[in-house]
Image (cartoon, rainbow over all chains, first blue to last red; front, top):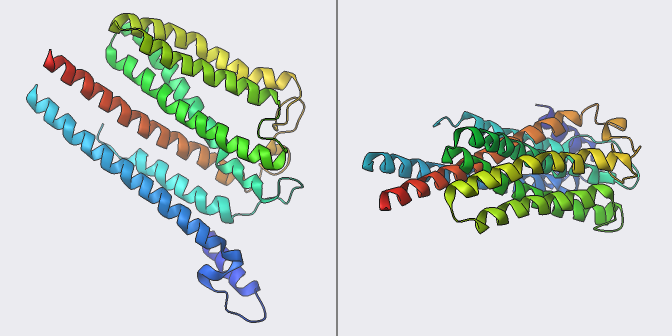
Length: 65
Length: 222
């Protein structure tokens, strides 16, 4: 919630020609934040798929033994 | 074993710290400027490394008692993951130091002792690879690990405090708590440390499970 408030106050503080909204506001730092989040999320999903694959192998190994 | 909740908790926490770490309020300090936000990302690397080495030494001691190869596997893989976090900590620290202290490697006691500690744990990996026989390798490396851990703690947390250091909280320098870490920054920094620790544990368990599988398939082959 506080993050959203932060976004709103930044969008409002920019007087004059008001075009800076959403991702274009505040020096475009939000773009960087979202890029980092995408990379991080991808990394986590990747870890998760590896986790699942190992789980499958473990099941297979158990059935063989 | 199949419970994923703590893995996603760690991921969610780090997710939050990326948002709050980049957008949250930080004190305006000379020299540091916005780079103070590195505290949220550089320091947790070292925290995660510490936890990995701690897990490693606990399982090394367990292995000496039990002799179970599984305990040995956890000990090795913890060190392997700890070394990765150590590498990230060193690289991110060197970049930060270059900008704020004017040199990627100022001869700061904390830097030098962290380099020695890293080499010590690299030696652990080399030592393991040099020994072929499984039980001997397990025992010798476990004993080495038990000695390495307290030396690492002394190198990283005791010796730098006895001399002058550029790092906050060392050699008479005030810690970050002296500036702002009491307030809003703590609400990002502490979760960040916890989140990266959990992710470190996750990667460690993945590596451990692979190693165990390899071990069992080797057994089946013989």
